[in-house]
Length: 197
Image (cartoon, rainbow, N blue to C red):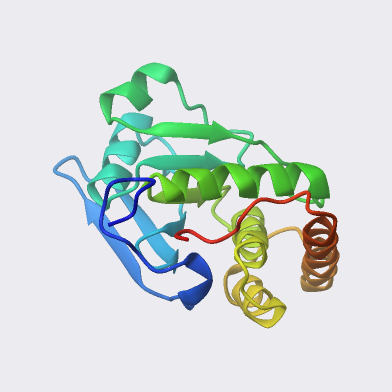
C-alpha cells in the first residue's frame, strides 16, 4: 500500500521502461483520441481534437481511456472549464510555440508538477498539435526527470517527435536538460523523483 495515495504500490517511474502501447476510443458520435503510452498506464502523448470535433467529445474519449489530467502545450486548443468539468478532467496549460525550445526552468517546474500528480494516482496525457514535436520533447524531459537514461529520452523523441523542431535541436535540449537536472540534484534543489518511495 502506498501511504501517499492509499492505493496499491506501483513501481517507481524510473523502473518502468518507456512503452509503445497505443489505445484509441471512438464514441457513438465518432469522436476519438489516439493515446500513445510513454510510461505504461501513467504518462501518454495524445493526438489533439480533430478539426470541428467538439472539445468535450475529445476529452470524454481521453477520460474513457483513463486519462485524468491533460497537459496542453498547444496554443490553439481552447480548454474551457465547463468542458473539463463535464468529463471530469483537470488541465495544465503550458502553451509553447512549435519552433522554440522551452526554457529549462519552466520545463523542470512542469516535470515536478506532473510527478506530483502521478504520485496522487493521476494518469497524465500530454498534447500539442498533430505533429507531436512539443509533446515528445516534454515526454523525453519527463523521462530524464524521473531517472531514465538519456538514451531512452533521445530514442523516444526520435521515434515520436516530428514537427518544426529539428532532431538535433531536440537532442541538444535533452542533453542540456539532463545537465540541469543533475546540477539541481547535486545542490539538493530537487525533491525525490521516484513515483513510489
